Image 1 (cartoon, rainbow, N blue to C red):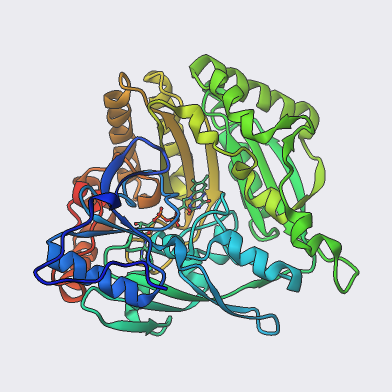
Image 2 (cartoon, rainbow, N blue to C red):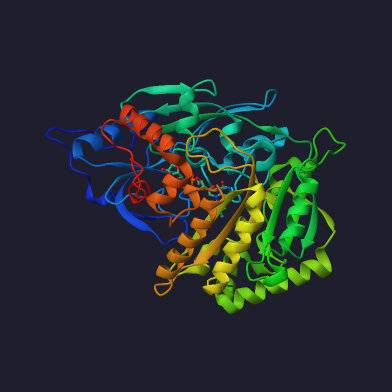
Amino acid sequence: MSTMIPLSHPAPKLPPERVAKVAGYGMRSSSDGYLFRPTSVEDLRYLLQLAKETGRQIVLRGAGRSYGDANIGSECIIVDITRMNRVLSWNPHTGIIDCEAGVTVEGLWRTTIEDGYWPPVVSGTMFPTMAGALGMNIHGKNSFKVGTLGDQALELEVLFPTGELRVLTPADDLFYQVISSAGLLGIITRVKLKMKEVHSGNLKVLAVSCESWDEQFEVFEKFEHNSDYLVSWIDCFGKGKELGRGQIHVAWYQDEPYAFPPSLKPESQDLPDTILGAFPKSVVWRFLKLLNNRPGMRFVNWAKHHASMLLGNGKEIEQSLVGFSFLLDYVPNWRNAYLPGGFIQYQTFVPRAKAKEVFTKQLQLQQEAKLESFLGVLKLHKPDKFIFSHAVDGYSLAMDFKVTKKNWKRIQELCHKMNDVVLEAGGRFYFAKDSTLRKSDVEGYLGEETLAKFRALKTELDPDTLLTSNLAKRLGLF
Ligand SMILES: Cc1cc2nc3c(=O)[nH]c(=O)nc-3n(C[C@H](O)[C@H](O)[C@H](O)COP(=O)(O)OP(=O)(O)OC[C@H]3O[C@@H](n4cnc5c(N)ncnc54)[C@H](O)[C@@H]3O)c2cc1C
């Protein structure tokens, strides 16, 4: 049943009880707007009309897992897609799933795993919706092998602000423009995906410790043609010869000699309720908060590196698909450890040949500024054809910076210096992980031609400029 208020004449007013504050996942940016949770395409049409009649703009929002300001819009109508979450059909013979766009990564795997299928691309958390995941075109730890989620989508249904509802496939140019466009061209309402067939709910995982960037890249290159997933944790406090030290995890799908392996039961994938069998997960962030400062994190990173060298190096283990893929979901509310100021995530994508030079410079810059990232994650990628693509034939380094009232200006300055290094190397950025880009940075990596193409599409598909976000405004995207 629709939850929307009927349109009335004279023009309706937005009900004050709809006012809500929403934030990006990093909690540094938040804004007030009028929050609606539609359940159907008709509701979405209604909201487009409501926006026109009230002179408001709309920000589209999935599960709110983008770190910065792409999913918030000051004074906007916030269209939260999470209640459009029905799986419309699932065919275990073809591996094709058709679902409303509010279905989450978790919703996908819980529907299909028992039949031996896993989402082809997943983020480091299972909570994003398909709408948000395609809005940003997410990548996983298998990015070097299968590309981004958009590369795996078969079909999208999109409601454009003009009221036109269209089905797009990879044969349509618009498919490559709506995916990755950060919710600024149209509302994704339904998605068809081909799931990945798996014969076990477990992966074989090899840990390899590295003392430097050279070792990191050597190991990635060694396994890139001979593995299913590759990811590395980087200790951003490592200095001098130890710059780039950390631990790589290489993983492979497994075969199990049963028709219905028990590891494919959804319940065997559930994450444990406690950590180390003792600590209730719900309180762990409070302990993290005690260490969530520069000396604490220097120590944690140092200890993790040395423990990995001594105990983990070269060890092979079996790990569930969920356990391996969604490490950060082990600790609920871990982001609260960054309160009160929140944090930003900063991820840059650099062509192979320049990766060592750029990441070295980025770590040196943060060490000089005494603003080291508390966590670094290295991944390997391949390029794609989507309009706001972040992908390159090369590596990405993602970093988390704790924000305080005192350090915010310095963090922005640091990011701008790091951006310059990335741009000079022909690198790219990712709107899902951005809080500090400037308009000139975006012009630098997307280029005039792409931006002009985007603006022409925006005029054609959204002539009243109904769709926006604080990110779009900050970066002057249209
Ligand atoms: C712990 C953690 C780990 C992560 N790991 C990864 C990772 O490994 N790889 C990766 O790529 N990302 C990763 N992310 C980022 C996350 O996957 C993306 O930000 C994703 O877009 C979040 O989806 P969401 O449903 O929360 O969307 P939101 O963040 O709410 O929105 C994302 C974008 O989609 C737009 N949008 C929302 N609904 C629609 C719609 N119906 N139609 C069109 N556009 C829409 C929004 O306007 C916004 O621009 C991670 C995030 C977290 C918090």
